[in-house]
Image 1 (cartoon, rainbow, N blue to C red):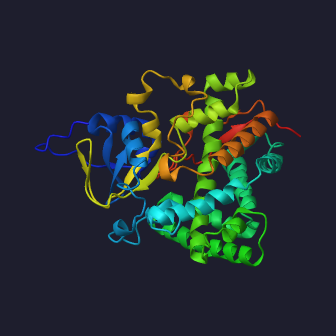
Image 2 (image 1 turned 180 degrees about the horizontal axis):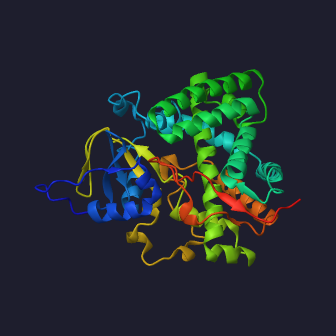
Length: 404
């Protein structure tokens, strides 16, 4: 990147939190690349500056260097008001996502071991059971909002089952997590409080009544997590498990319904996995995240990143960086999994196999049950939720011949 002329008035930071960005983030990334290069000054909320990395090679360098780009936000957090709408998504928590060094290794070991014990055959059967139940709720109507009636119930019910969470507690957890993702100050604060209370109840329940579930395995792990640490491991698991998975399913169904390459290819035997990977390349549900906080000013290709200021990786932009994609088209991405949407390095997603299986099974079940599924409105009328981190539809209305 060629640094900007110091004598010129620098362009204003790009707001990632407004409806304009949500409506067409890819156009925004293209403008960022033209004006700033691979490292972009942005605002995550009014008055909350950060650097957004939109270059693939720069992202790999940062993600593979936890010493200079640690994930612990505590010093940054000292200067952030409690009313900051993105604080619940970024604040320090004693878990693998927000820690570095030995503590990160301890938390990650417990999470990885607890997730690896999930039986994949049982998980597939669980997804099929939940998907069948969700379909039964609307298949006779001839129309549905797949986001709220299919994708979300599957993500919620499957994750709750994996974590050994009763429905009543799980509903409060899901509502709290959704409020946090909205990134509006009052809503996010309410969501954070609701989430904490519900998760504390789940931890207490599984300490008293352990079962064959991820929460109980975390409690039994040699890391000897205390109640507060347990609560915050579950924050990460729910945060990565409900909202992103919901929108991975929905965004992939949208891609299949609107892209002839997939709508025709699936009938010819093209796997749903190819559509999933294309979405993870082009429109991942967690578009901008993987946050780190340099402990001192650090130069990255002529750009000085401030100490203790957030550095975010734009998986959506980095995956589509012309420096690495060249002339590759979307159709040529099928089967290529060299994207950053699961992150890389110390904070690589430990549940990617589970997420693939859940999303692929849910989408396959849907398309097999409703082969004439179609959008119920022009794609231009679909609305995307504002927020600096996610790529999330407001709704996904569909129609199909009613199945009695």
